Length: 395
Image (cartoon, rainbow, N blue to C red; front, side):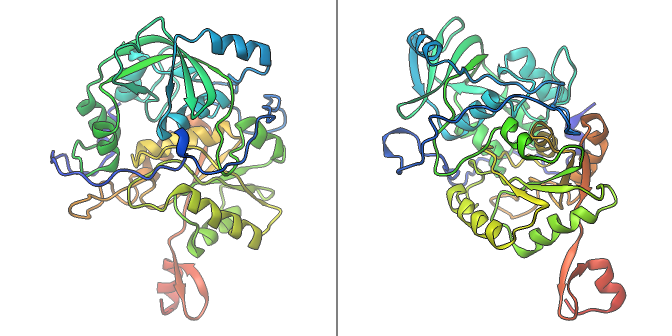
């Protein structure tokens, strides 16, 4: 299997760079006033009644519940460090089981196998993109226990078991299909990440604070109706009318059962530089959710850091939504795609991600629901482009 073969992309290397990516979570002393969820507890990890089985068969839960145990773990740390926005997203999804079956950041062997083969060693489970912890610190070495913090809030104890220097050019070529800095994911790996990656296990202490709540997979699962299809809709931008038509019409798709429901599950973590910041996007989602109340539509929010990796990121999204209880995944034109910051050309073909998802969907046990090519017409509103052409409607 050669993952890079799915990309219809350019492979030239350039040295131009675009701006930094939008931060969403506020770390350090300059955070805005935020809601606290100190008493929030993970609900029981259960898959009873839901069609979707977590990736690997079991939903991971690394959050320590006992306060005395938390105190002991905090005191056992050799030193503490501040998490950046991307590290915070990855740490949270490891703690709460969103990245099941992982129980920590990848060691070198796991990293290499995922980069080259999209497989976890041992289990051979599909995994779209590597989950790594980057650093430039000399003291981040095997054997050290590191307290990971968001401001003054302790998020997790990280026991380092591996330290290695990755081949970032190879990583980008395999994961993004290109090595040019015109790609936002390549730019992130090359200019934001440290020189070394460290792997090891995590013990969760607290979920992050933010201005909006991102429920855990267990909590989302507890709200879903048993025995029905759950269709996930992913987006990283404000939902516009065509998006709304897509996820409401998905309930009538031939792949979806008659009692199916939709989970609108936008990512609210860092993304590419010219996207609208996550905290602003969230406010638009709240308004739209209120205006379009529907008993078959649920809204939740995902603390995920976008890579704009096209086909391979589609697999990552499907896997994560499976852990949240979803059986189906709406996948649109140029899913998780991006354009060159210089030429504006697309890095991936319009249907690369759809084709890749269809190929791997059966193994993941997540059914891709290809999005309709909708257009707005004066006569009938939103219809498919095919219907508009056949009926001679004006777009």
